[in-house]
Length: 99
Image (cartoon, rainbow, N blue to C red):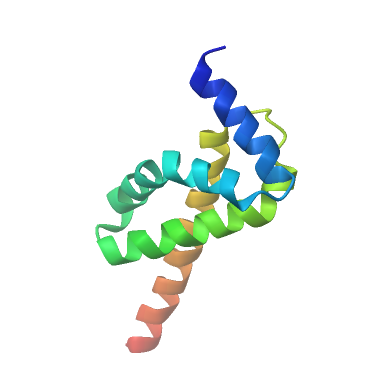
């Protein structure tokens, strides 16, 4: 196991125990990647920022449920996709109401 993976596992364990500092380390590693991923779908920086923030909030709230059966990035990006889908549904409803 490389040093980065070991640090990530430590941060995950500490964050699961309630350490906001450890979770902040995970945010620092993955924020740019998740933002870029979401931006590629929505095409607007302000929306990608909002969705990234929402995804990290959901990840923080659900972190105790992360079981390391997949990589943290995979789990986080799945949360990001779910947030994106919810945004898409809200946008579709908003557009229909504007007609």
